[in-house]
Image (cartoon, rainbow, N blue to C red; front, side, top):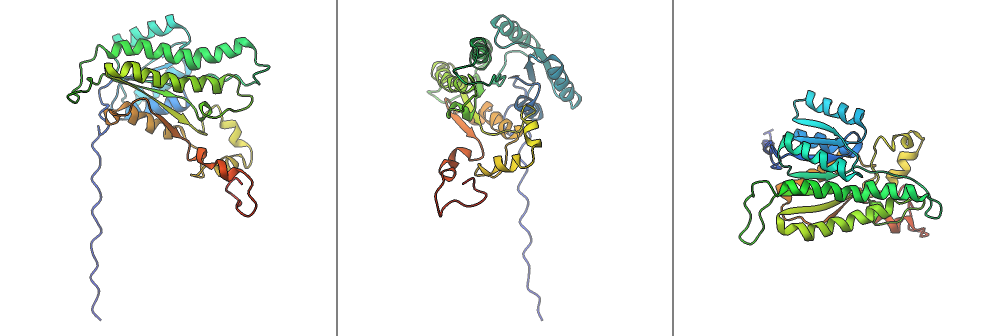
Length: 297
């Protein structure tokens, strides 16, 4: 019998260029870079050739992180800083400018959580959360944005301001939805979201973009113990459309895009990166005859 001709498999798509994002050589700053989401963002930036300034108040953690990246050939340096202190932020920004030149990108990620009901949380703990999660974001944005004004202007459209830099604020899905006993955390993240839009409006004409990411459930060192409980991860995964818990790299990939010139027309945006958890509300409401096992109903 004659054999049927088989077609050759389609050629593999070409690999993207190494600097597809256009971040190589553009100095970037990441706060809270000693672990978790901040560490993943720093790793991602180093992998695409961006010089990275790693900021964290946990000196051993941030120094260890810088050592790991430097061992892989990355151009990076660690700085110990308390983002709630303007003097500390100002001094660190100047050191970074001397070490790397004016920065292009900033990722506001350092965060603090002090759980407790609003009726009970001590005022000093409320203030401490706001000082790091909201005021700290403003201080970092202010001091590093001044450097962005020193950068050579990148070409833009006929009516567009020259691109000088980008800021990404790591907020939270909690900024959209209240969560009992989260203390000042939800309020601080809601403040971050509006502050990011305010910065976009005020600094956009200067060529500086400001965007926010709202992570959902992300596995980090702070939550690692939770997942040791039998069945915990499955229960969490079940309330997402993607049926999985997020990883720090999921947020890092989004942050790199927002920092890059590829996102040049994205300004004042809030990107929800939660695996579709925000869309699962109606499946969590009991509906006889509709809910199915494994969908969170």
